[in-house]
Amino acid sequence: MAIDHAVQKSGSTDTEAMRSVLAKGNIPTTRGLLAMNTNQFPIQNVYLREVILDNDGNATLKVIGTVMENHGDVYAKDCKF
Image: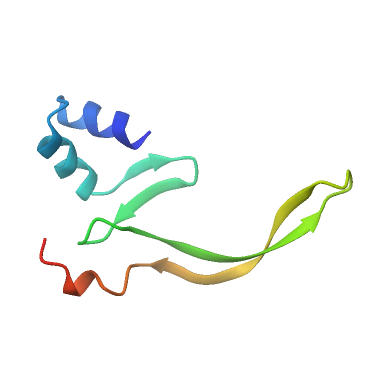
C-alpha cells in the first residue's frame, strides 16, 4: 500500500520522488494513516499483547493495552537525514 501510495502521489517510480512522498507521511495502511518521523521510521502506537487460546484452541493475540501512543524512534534526533 505504501509503495502504491508513493507511485500515485509522485506520479513516478523514481526512488527519490517516492521517498519524498513517503517522508511526508499520511500513508494509508490497514491500521489507518501512517506518520513518519524525521529519520523515516514510523510514528505509531505500541501495544502490550498476550498470546491466548481462542474458543477453537488456536493461538491468537489479545491486546491488553496501549503502552505508548504516537511513539517515535528515540534516536531520530541523532540521524543525519
